Image (cartoon, rainbow, N blue to C red):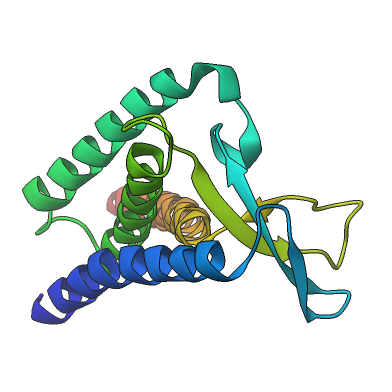
Length: 182
């Protein structure tokens, strides 16, 4: 239990720090719209500001997205605290990644704008290897949310498969016992 607590606290601390420091470096060293090749044909750093939700969508309802984000962050935090003894390690790490990424992007939405609570998210990671498939620019916080969500989905699928197999084995065992009694 102590090891997972250290991992969770590390994620909750490191993701926002790395995300905010990387964004600060981008803002201080690049012009808005500027793109710098990191790995030619594969990865660029392209400085943009995203005033919408995921991948720039829903930019006209930013206030609604901010409210939903705050609610999600609070709910995930409460669930992690309340059910920490019942949640497995993968779920705790997944939720930590989602929570920390969401929190860091909320920092942007709160403070990186003309007015407080009217900010934009700073994005800069431009994976350009397959532009026909992927043309989005994102940041470290977005990566944490996506990786955490993916881990959580895989964990849920694996758990359901295990439960199904356990129930199937129990039914088979019960059927064997019943047939041997007859």
